Image (cartoon, rainbow, N blue to C red):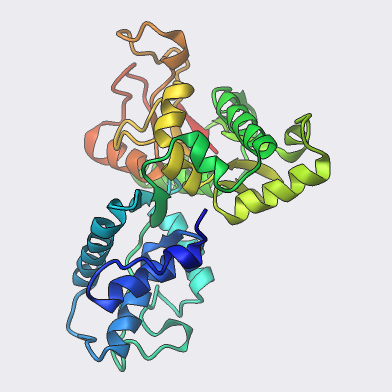
Length: 336
């Protein structure tokens, strides 16, 4: 298997900027937030004496996308590509997290981050974004993708753990919902805006595609220390994520690499708005919400949305579930 450093030497385009952007993505373990790449592009343009202070943020985004497309033309010949994927927790939550990561000043201040003189005396404002760029192998099967990084026992653990996540996500739990969850906060913010009621009563149901660390230690083919070490590596590679409460779930790289496999093997519903895999967001709270044309019981679960997709749906489409007619404002389930 080629290392990221070796892959970064792949000739991608005549313009050196494209090569450096690819190197930047690979140096970030193959996954990079849109705003980080915009800042990198600004710095590269500055170093090349091509920085245009009059360029709008949308023009910077368009220019970045042009470079990514050019990179993909070359990568496609080698069986790789960079895909764009939106995080299910939504633009607002991701932006708040990135403000901390980038140490931005004030209201999402941008281009002069990290002491850079990217924008000279001008100040650019980074957009709210939940978009990430992920470098993936586009030709291998799920088995061979895993085999490039993990031993056979580790692969078996990963497949087993993913199965636990997906099975657990189908169970709805009634009871107190954590006020510290970023998803609960975002959904409640959206519901308050939709109803105009600051005292809106939050929902009392949730489901989660995550599993506690103790449960994951039950895998028999690896020792507890080996599992803990593997979980740490999986989180570093953005295959799994770990919550403050010590629960693990599927992260963006796993979704990007294995989305088709996950949706087909585990018969999970995709987001009703964007039709992508949704393992964080909102579900219709009516457990009788079923597609009458779907004869497979396993696949006939309630409709589900990512955070931003849910906001769009109740704001611009309907406040009722299109499948069962339930009022989503009062009858919903957090998907944590």
